[in-house]
Amino acid sequence: MTQKLLREDFQVIGIDNMNSYYDILLKENRLKSLKENENFKFYKINLEDKDSLKKIFQVYKFDIVLNLAAQAGVRYSAKNPSAYYDSNIVGFLNVIGLSKDFSSKFIYASSSSVYGAEINIPYRESIKKVSPLSLYGITKKVNEDIADFFHSEFKFKSYGLRFFSVYGPFGRPDMAYYKFSESIRRGHPITVYNRGLMSRDMTFIDDICDGILNAIGLDINAHEIFNLGNSHPIKLNYLINFLENFFNKKATINFEESQEEVMHTFADISKSKKILGFSPKVSFEDGMEIFLKWFCNYYSFNE
Image (cartoon, rainbow, N blue to C red; front, side):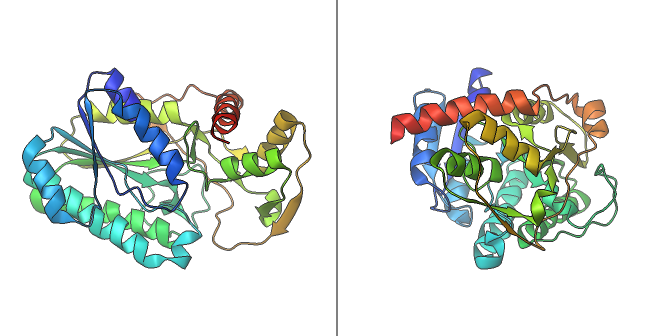
């Protein structure tokens, strides 16, 4: 997203704590390319550190705050819940509070994980009561509730974007498409939950970036929630077959059952189309080809 903003002539201040949840080298390589642009500056800060954040707000007086920061991961949230409270609750409160104090437009990342146990698909933003299945999903729903409060109490407008299984170059290595690519490439076994019958509304990063950019241009005096998905769920077994064909290797699969995983995600994007002009353009097959070419080039260079 930062690369797209820089190409659109925005000045961007990046904030990240660069934690070790996944490969720090991948994060550093992302950051290295961004630092080559004179319109980008970076600060290594925890969002929980409100005093340090406030100093940055005082210096730059941001027109727009785009909060994509969060401790992600469904299963990890059961292992290290305090990390999710610190980053996703305390950190979020600090960022939205300072955005209000400095009159910055506030846009933030929510997640399809908020839908949790919802069985009616495709998922619509108008669903009144959702029941997340993971602590991660709960924290993202709390973010939305906090943003609701800030609008009702302070008339502070904000836009929450529920992302659906974002993938692409320099993506998160803990996600299934990335982990499976690595394991199949190396001939290592993969763990597949719930017999591989799950499906995910996989959305290519470029489409997500277009949706975010459109949200930046939006001006509605409200707290609004938007689905950003591809609206074409991909079955897990289809993903595995696609990777097997790409690497010309048969996956060795260990099957496990998991209650933490929802069976299907499927975004209704009619609201996003109407209000944001959001229209995903990249098919799963084309997006995965782009990712896999990057993946092979990246790891052949860094190994």
